[in-house]
Picture 1 (cartoon, rainbow, N blue to C red):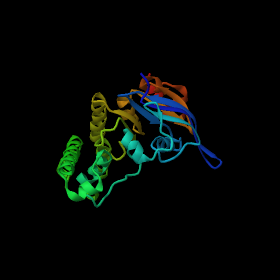
Picture 2: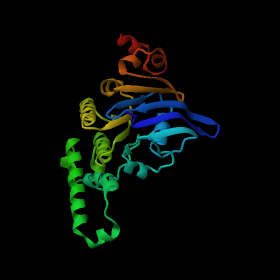
Picture 3: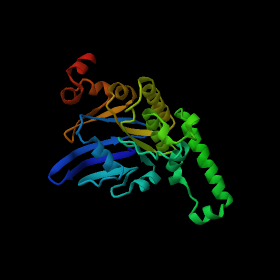
Picture 4: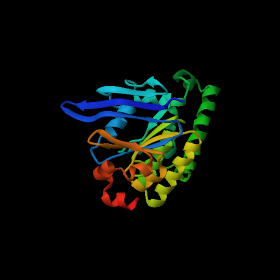
Length: 259
């Protein structure tokens, strides 16, 4: 069976600076893959290329065997790839529910004329969207704040709101950029468990994260970048004792603690 996502020989240059070079890996269906590395390793640049924010200088990105280079983020969402951002992208004056409904928009089929006429098909679609949004808010423990402005939420709640908005479109692949940032240990544990449950339900994840305990617990495989190059890929127990990874990122103390 072919991989859901394939990245081949990917490179991104900004003028004379090479941010990512010769990166190749894949993500299989119903797999959780973590992308780790020191600050400046090229993780967000790689995410931006996969999600259509940046166009690679060279290389190939395939989703279900089809090239997605040049596709805009909204086109990728329709193809089943959604993402969250390292810096929160939330509509603070809109309610929590309205924020999640924005994520469902890619699945809406009614056009402006049908919406203006308030046809029955539009009402059914709007009701379905609302039900799906409330369902995902409930799964992330945000149902009680569904009708309050998003700007009143804590930072951790806003992180969960972004993930709920990404999940409501029922994507095949979710890209999460530091999803545990701002979460307390209990919230982090709950999110890890949620990701693992969603994987069992058919979801696939590629995520960037600095919380190594969460990475080691949640991931099926880990891709490690350093100075824009991929220095290792493997299962968590393999990465924990990989010499180059320990030197570049985890630190000797971490490697010794995993022996």
